[in-house]
Length: 187
Image (cartoon, rainbow, N blue to C red; front, side, top):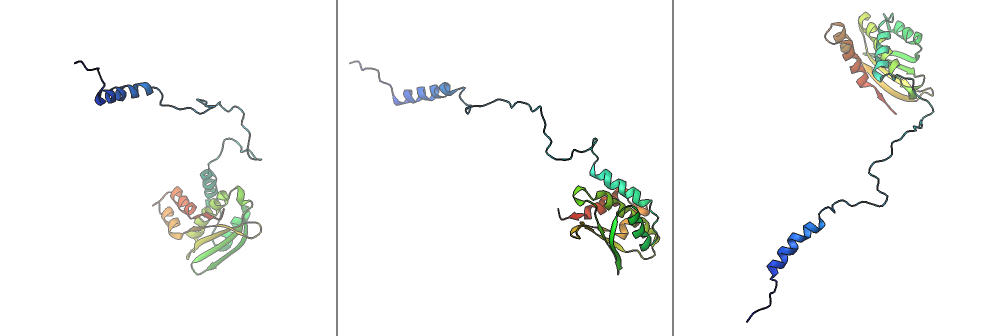
């Protein structure tokens, strides 16, 4: 007797197992409606602020370093001459007082929202001749105030940083970076 040919389960699974992936080949990426391969380039730029910067843009460290270099040239020999040098540079000193080993400075920043780095640099630079001329220098603790007297930020200068710079153990940039690292602002 001759049996009709029947597909065995193994033959069926082998056929489907081989044909299935071949049928789905090339269908791996699915696109949404409105798909674009690349966005159109933007040709018109609209400024987002009311002020545009002058070009070329100065780095914030340029402002700070310029302030330090200018401050180093100040004729500072005492606490009084330190205050006078700051005021001559246009820094509105609100208070300068020494208590024990600290020289507390409070000054009103002209426009803290546009930057205080040049002023901080100038104060850090003028602090150097103060330390070198003083027989008993004090650590600088400076507070930056806004026009209405609200505390905007603080920074510190240490006597041993100035002495390390003066002795040639560290360059001026290292001194400037140390003072700048202490700058903390509220905004």
